[in-house]
Image 1 (cartoon, helix red, strand yellow):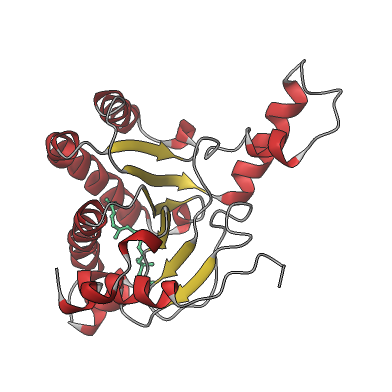
Image 2 (cartoon, rainbow, N blue to C red; image 1 turned 45 degrees about the vertical axis):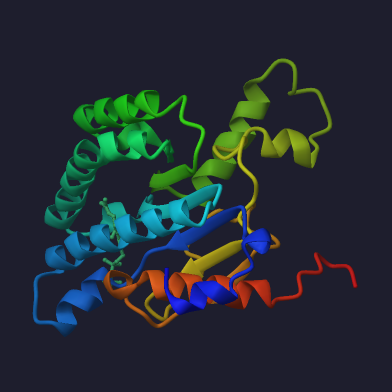
Length: 239
Ligand code: FPP
């Protein structure tokens, strides 16, 4: 742990941290490298953040890994990212299990390859009984898609379709139904937008935007951000 951690109040940590990992391409460009190298370095940064969150006992970490809009990228980049995911899942599953991490893949699995779905399902079932940190990898995830999916699920549920829909019913039909809402969303790379990420769940989340490009995102920066979070006055619309 670095010095900054000494100022962190371990009793005031967020339960759920959500991260929009952005800037792999610009990181690569700044170093005259191919974008794919940026994505590979991005995986290293993600592993580092997962480790830090486990070390400080974060209950839940969500990482925006591939959005429903990312299919618009050149086919070569999409297949590189899909392949990287498969490799990452394959390589990390033993370690994640040993670290007692329960992995959820959140998103619409329909468009993913059979091979990837198989690997995802294996990872989810292998870590299903883990009781440590929950790691949500958001893959082919889009908040609008999640909301429409929830509406259709409610509409098609005979026990619900005639009822007045409450926040609770709606929440229970989201992909994240069993999870607490994130207290903080971090986005790297200097972009200050939410990009279709957990729109319902982050209604009252603290937002933190950093100029750091994702591959350079370090343990120290995460701990600094959490220290900043602890100084914020969360009022939820009250006084
Ligand atoms: C954003 O950078 C990053 C992504 C679209 C992919 C995010 C995922 C990871 C880096 C880590 C883990 C990934 C896998 C597949 C296991 P960008 O490409 O949008 O960067 P740019 O905005 O600078 O072009």
